[in-house]
Amino acid sequence: MAPINAGNATKKEMALFFNTLSCLVKNLEKQYILVDLRNELSLYGKVINVDAYMNMEMEDVTLYDTRGQEKALSNFYITARCIRYVHMPERADAMALLTSQLSSMTSTKKDKQKRVYKTSRALRNHADTLKDAYTASKQLI
Amino acid sequence: MADELDVIPSITVKEPLDLVRLSLDEKIYVKMRNDRELKGRLHAYDQHMNMILSDVEETITTVEIDEETYEEVYKSTKRNIPMLFVRGDGVILVSPPIRTS
Image 1 (tube, each protein chain N blue to C red):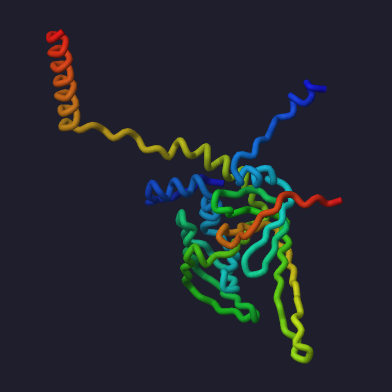
Image 2: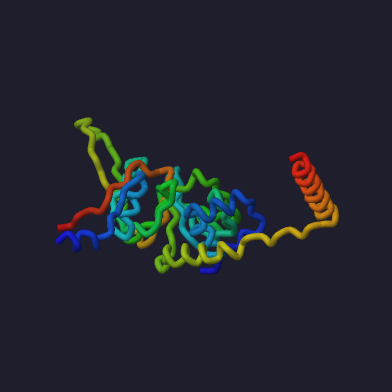
């Protein structure tokens, strides 16, 4: 139930995490799960990484085809559009996870960037110019 | 009588997905691509129609042609999945709660 640890996610990816259900798949990282693909293959393995588009990186994968044949693969990368189903652990509570995600949302906001001298000087000069313009317009009236 | 009616919150359906929201925590029917059908309890959904379903019954319909009579034989296989994440791009339609009598 930990909030997503989306290390180097871009702003767009963060938006996707908070607006779609990909955060629930993200939460399955480090777990062994079963994924059904669109080409009728199933694979069981440990999830390493999931991005906001739901592309998945897995390791220690066993691949099952429709004839029931198995194949063991050490690494596997799945593009999002190949996924049909992801079998979630039975105890997963979608609502509880989503609410915890939302509560963690405020804390992910970046701190205000510290102003360097250059920007504060520029702002000060800008304020002065505005003040001058204002007094000049007053005098005209 | 009028007072009683006022107490009931009016649920407005403004956009199509509001209808899906009304089906939250209810048993729904989902038609999928590749002749698949799902029946299960809806826990969550998003704008792509990604869905979390529990107690899912998946029905896969396959057509086989009888070698002697050349008739099309429909075969359906079912399986049960306790908790399933369904990716939205495979969804064709979502039908609101199945009223079980």
